[in-house]
Each structure stands twice: as C-alpha cells, then as structure tokens.
Length: 183
Image 1 (cartoon, rainbow, N blue to C red):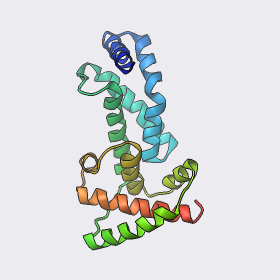
Image 2: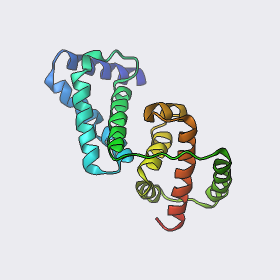
Image 3: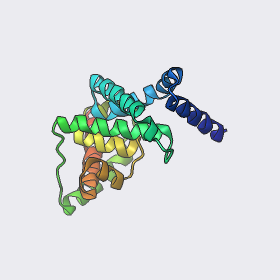
Image 4: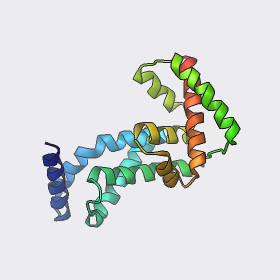
C-alpha cells in the first residue's frame, strides 16, 4: 500500500514537471496544511507561517526540475519550509546561549525528576511550547515534533551540537516550568 502511495506522489510530481497546472494545485493541497503546521511550530506566528509556506511552495515549484527523488517530495518540501522558518527567526535575531557542561548536567537531573511528576494534555503542551522563546521553541520543535536528531539541528541552525543539546535541555526545563504554573 505504501509503495502505491509513493508512486502516485511521484507521478504527480512528474506531471507537475511537465507543466500540468491541475497537478500543481493537487500537490499544493496535499502538502499545504502539514507545511503550514511545521512552520507555525517554529515561527510561532500565523502570518509568518503563511508567508513561509507560500514562499516554500513557490521555490519548490520553481526548482521542481532539480528534484531528483533522493527523498520524498514531502521531505524535500519540509526541508525548504524549515529553512525558511529558521530564516524568519534569524531575522528576529535568534540567540542561542552556550552553557558549560556542569550547568547542563544539573539541568538534566532537575528535569528528570520533574518529568516523572507531570502529565499534561496535548493542547496544554502545545500552548506551553508557543510561549517559549524562539530559540528554545525551534530546537524543541525540530527535535520532538519534526524528528530531526541533534546533529541535524546543529547543521540546520549553523550552531554546535553542544548548543543544540543545551537549548533542548533548557527548552524542556522552561516548558516544564510553564506547565507547572498552569500554562
């Protein structure tokens, strides 16, 4: 079943490459909601997420002939969306702060005990994530929600793996504090 879905997507992309305008619309509708949500989780602003999504589709459609199926079209598009979302944050002057190893270790110990005590509904967590600073929210979203590993996040953001790990620890700690305080 999954193979068939992949073949349909590939056929759709190929029809787009041939200039079939109806296929462009179908491809857009197939991915628009997921790409919007991906961007929204990173930029935390509906208007910015809409802009990112539109620019990402324009770029993807412009460069469609460069798409070589090294990944699925959706993964390729998602990477474009994430990069554009991060560029929005950079324009906002995203700052990521280094921590020394001893501080990170202390935060990890505190976090473990707090995590065992807390169980929240998805909506409460989502609202808590929205309240995080851009840097924290970006790293947390890319790691937990988008499935990137810390090395990939470091490459995407142009920062060290240590900084990603530190931001992730701080983001989880801050999120736990927000949730403890009732959102």
